[in-house]
Amino acid sequence: MASKKLDTFANVAAIQVTETAANTQTSAKFAFPFSIMDKMALIVSRVEFDFVNLMTALTASGDRMTLALTAAATVVNIMNPADPLIIDSAKISRYDLGVAASGFFLRQPFVKDYSNLPGGGLLLAPSPLYAMVEGASAAVACQASFRIYYTYIELSTDEYWQLVESRRIISS
Image (tube, rainbow, N blue to C red; front, side, top):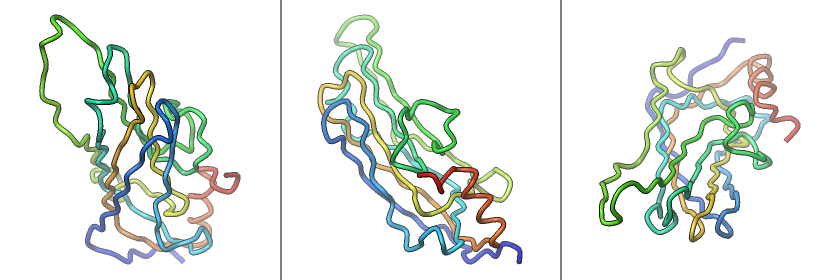
């Protein structure tokens, strides 16, 4: 049995994550109505990363906030692009240059568009799927919001287990 597309229009899932304390990695799980046994997948065409309290959290040069979409809450380093559990990430750092009164407007959210990829986006298992935030040298607990645009697809058993194994979901 080949994969079967169930959706034609984009759905939106949103979640907000706040660190439990400043400079700690914190995650929140998306609540899709599928388990890993349902053989359902998401084709994610777009992700919006929004650094919610950027101005109050990053108060000194060198402060950093990192956001990530992951396939497990057990990720140790969300800045490691080689970790198969990390689906994608966004990072913002503060660097002070020139006089203290200088400034600029930051346009948010940071948008990652995957719609031009083969198949129309990233193929992900809907469960488990986590949003993570981590501050470094931040003055207060970092807060972020995530919006993902997706369609559902039903996979054959073989296709689904290939997807699961590619993200090491079984071991998490």
